[in-house]
Length: 416
Image (cartoon, rainbow, N blue to C red):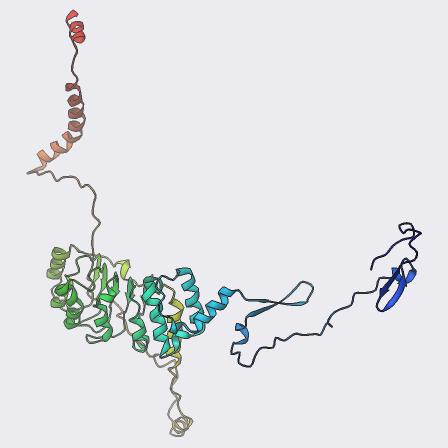
């Protein structure tokens, strides 16, 4: 409402009337100076609900609006960004994507997280297809290291999904009881695992037959696990000297563990390994085989955690029926306490190493000093004593002998 005073107004204009709240007031009067409280458009208890079409199948949290409140307490809604809407749409239908090759990695990681939150990879039919889209395009970004130590149930339940990850650099299958004829052992020797550098096959019921199958592509076709730098074959009693001979094909090995195997002649085996591969027997335990730093790393890390929890949650312990408990009490049999019985072991590992056979490649010394042949202590001592003297005396005279004297220098010398 505009208000004028008598001093500011012009006497020729006359009185000014203002309409407010359907009432007419004279400008400058007492009633017009009273400030009325502002009217609220809605009451304090007013609420808003967005009405959508009946065919809208979006979940409440996935609706294309974001509701917030201002500082004054009023409700405000804004639309979601177009990028978020497009990302949610693709995540809901990721199994229908033709290919993700050439797609930006930053956007692909967010897409994988959104699809994982919607449990798109847990479906028995479309989950495998959707996961293959990511593994084909991004390789080691999906998983660079995979630790399945003791998770034999997960290996059997999710075998096809595990075989999709081709960019692994480290794989731990210890205590999984695979055996010589397991399908995963054949997959390890294929070209899909060519990038593998570290392989742990401890306590897997392997024999010389399994080692021969594992090394056959490398020995015959020069393909497969030719780039291995670490191999753990310990706690496999059926592996003998014949199986160790097959392992000598891995020329790039830096660490090898064949402890607790069926090797009988340790001295001959150590000498054979050192001659063929250059690996030296370690007198102490190597930290590379402690499995301390081995863990799952990559985009699909949480996915394997979800699979593992789902597998173990499906296993329900059997409860003793009440009738059996009543019968035990009737016949006077004591109830078995949980403290007296040992808990079931999922996998058993050896308590102590009986045959320590771990090998490593010694560091190469750059520019080694040449060996000086000697026949006794006398010449060796003279050679070591004269070596620094020869280096200092022979280098300086050589430089002086090359300096040529001029005729003026000769005249100066003859004058003396």
